[in-house]
Image (cartoon, rainbow, N blue to C red; front, side, top):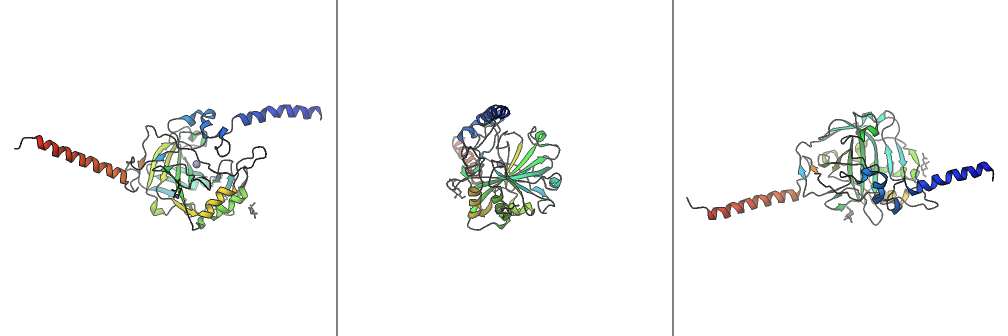
Length: 326
Ligand SMILES: *[C@@H]1O[C@H](CO)[C@@H](O)[C@H](O)[C@H]1NC(C)=O
Ligand SMILES: *[C@@H]1O[C@H](CO)[C@@H](O)[C@H](O)[C@H]1NC(C)=O
Ligand SMILES: [Zn+2]
């Protein structure tokens, strides 16, 4: 071995050790030593008090009549240009913001403070034995969840947007599974085979209308809104969350494609399937979750109103027993 070779070995060794000891985050399914309970050691924000995901307890929602329909623009046209599908080691992500293309895909209204550009969408899923949504509904985890990440148009960069509580708006969609294939997901599902390994990416054969990945447009007025964070490090508390009531349905085989095709980064010679890439629930603390105008009246909160009414009536009746007759 030449002296130079020795030098390089000595130089690179400490770097490799340091990378393994810290700086990387992961899910427990990849390695419990860098899993979600360790994220706050890498980024203090991950231990903050406005973290996501949370459980959506429909008995404790607060109705906000100001949460009307979200205006989706550019969702109904296949944009020119290309969309790149990437295995980033933690999820499969579809980049929507080319250098210019995404200017045309925006959301506004629905109580959002301004206009937001779509940047990327990605998925969280489970395993054959476990559901994998991040948010839960009345304590129930659903099979998958899709996140469409948007950036407030008044900021120039993601880093800048992350510095503001309403810098980002993420749309969360629960994904349910049935026997029927959802052909609108074919392009993404077919692309999974091209991004089997961490770091892989592929340009999809064509773009398509983003709206085809969503529930029927008539069902988009029902949603839940709260102030939270990114669900991966750096866990920036910069996200106005919108989680839709109506799920998207995909086929059992399509779910299986996510669970069985994609892999986490290689660790040594170990190749692990990418599964259970969801963050555990975070405490709501003093935050409130708001129900949009069009969200289904929750049995829970209606019951509570009824209870209060009944109690008041009962109290009145009791009082009247003690009041002197006129
Ligand atoms: C997983 O999702 C399915 C389909 O929605 C549901 O029937 C089941 O109860 C869920 N399982 C858990 C453990 O939440
Ligand atoms: C994607 O994978 C399929 C099947 O393995 C292959 O036929 C196709 O050429 C790949 N596409 C690209 C763009 O690499
Ligand atoms: Zn996500």
